[in-house]
Length: 257
Ligand SMILES: *[C@@H]1O[C@H](CO)[C@@H](O)[C@H](O)[C@H]1NC(C)=O
Ligand SMILES: *[C@@H]1O[C@H](CO)[C@@H](O)[C@H](O)[C@H]1NC(C)=O
Ligand SMILES: *[C@@H]1O[C@H](CO)[C@@H](O)[C@H](O)[C@H]1NC(C)=O
Ligand SMILES: *[C@@H]1O[C@H](CO)[C@@H](O)[C@H](O)[C@H]1NC(C)=O
Ligand SMILES: *[C@@H]1O[C@H](CO)[C@@H](O)[C@H](O)[C@H]1NC(C)=O
Ligand SMILES: *[C@@H]1O[C@H](CO)[C@@H](O)[C@H](O)[C@H]1NC(C)=O
Image (cartoon, rainbow, N blue to C red):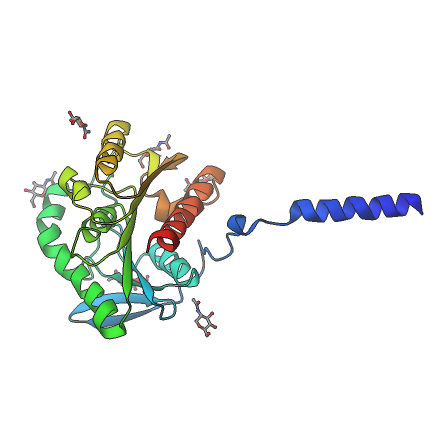
């Protein structure tokens, strides 16, 4: 009898120990499987749209692989499950880059000639206009990855449309794009990132500190450029980094949008 009740108490304790704190529940994140959103063309721009209509919407700005990459769709879907209508414009008009910006075969000169801010901003403007005018959301927040990370910063500038932003391993981000932010900005950085080596990361952090806006910079060990979207989730550190970067963005938007 005594042994049995002790056993029951131990089992109860074990169950308590196994209960997950909500912040550790990663079930809304999909890393594999089929995406659940749809594509619609508005003002000539293909938009990947996912999640239900909400007062605050997420503008999802992709890496160079664009909205056709399954991981980009799945991550946009995860923001949808977090409670936000999420829209990702096709930043490359159907022809994304076959390789990442940090790979040796990537011709930055020709890519930038075709995809600089003068070409990219108008595409993003269509997504912002769709959210604000067509859907009628009150607030837009921006999340961006690699190529798109720079634009998450750009869209938090006064008058560009986003109230708060998050960027994972942004590339080609200029100092004046950081100092121009007009709202809270968070960033996730990879340990191994030739596009943002430690000195650059420190400078970005210092520039954020000069803005007088709320900011947050998190560095994830064992990660490489691209991990926010394309982490190898079989690797425990990369999986933790990708999921934590997602929740970093979610908490940021919940607090500051
Ligand atoms: C959207 O709303 C429907 C109906 O309430 C619900 O079943 C579904 O889970 C919601 N989708 C998301 C991504 O929240
Ligand atoms: C998008 O992906 C689908 C399925 O993988 C493929 O058939 C299609 O050609 C891709 N489109 C673009 C624009 O890359
Ligand atoms: C990169 O593209 C530019 C412009 O298209 C071209 O002039 C240059 O030769 C290319 N560089 C390489 C290494 O292919
Ligand atoms: C760092 O990133 C590069 C390029 O993505 C990759 O080739 C290399 O294996 C990575 N190194 C480590 C230690 O993760
Ligand atoms: C970092 O900032 C210092 C001081 O402004 C500057 O001299 C240096 O070139 C910057 N380095 C990078 C990688 O941004
Ligand atoms: C992903 O990570 C696992 C575990 O570390 C490793 O065995 C596998 O080779 C990795 N896959 C790739 C494509 O790097």
